[in-house]
Image 1 (spheres, rainbow, N blue to C red):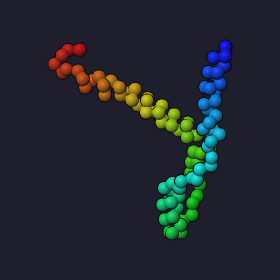
Image 2: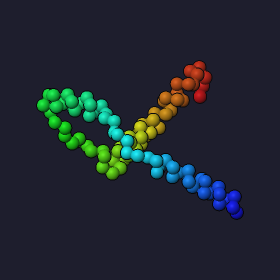
Image 3: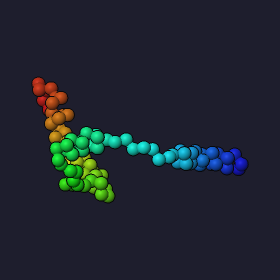
Image 4: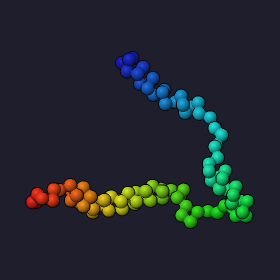
Length: 94
């Protein structure tokens, strides 16, 4: 029983070390901030909100799932042409 408690204590404490030791790190500026915004300000254009803001909720996840579904449907529709029809021997009857 003591051995089980000790194992659970050790395994449970492994996750706390990095969480407690993590400190606020300085944020690295990306390409948008360092290059695009610099040239936009030089040319007299200010930043604006995007037409489709994917930072709200699960919109980005939904768009990726929708694109995967559409791509899967297209690949499933053409599966026979891509992987089966081209591999058959033309002289061999089906």
